[in-house]
Amino acid sequence: MIAPRVQLQRRVHFGNFGAATAKAAMRSGMVWGVAGAIGVLYFAEKIPFIRQDIMSKLPVVGHLYVVPEESE
Image (tube, rainbow, N blue to C red; front, side, top):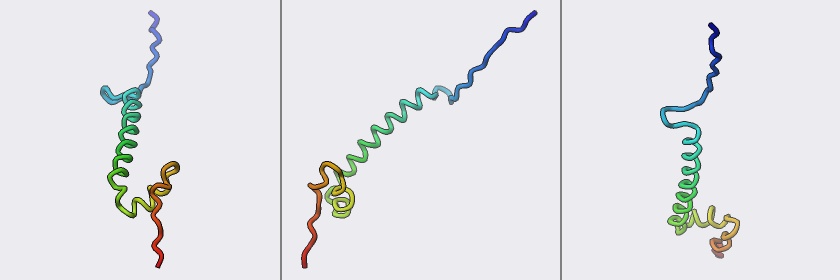
C-alpha cells in the first residue's frame, strides 16, 4: 500500500486571529491613530508651546499659527 503524500501549509494564527484579521486591525488602528492625533492637536492648539513648535510647522496651514515675537 502506498502512503498518500500530504503537504502541510504553515499559517501563523492565534485562534481566529490570523494574517487577514491582523491586516484589518492595523488598517483600522492607523485610521483611529490619525483621527486621535488630529483631535489632540485641535484641542491643544490654544497652548502656546503646541502652537509655536508643532502647529506653525505644518505644511499647508502653518502660516495661520505663527506666533509673533515680542519686541522689547
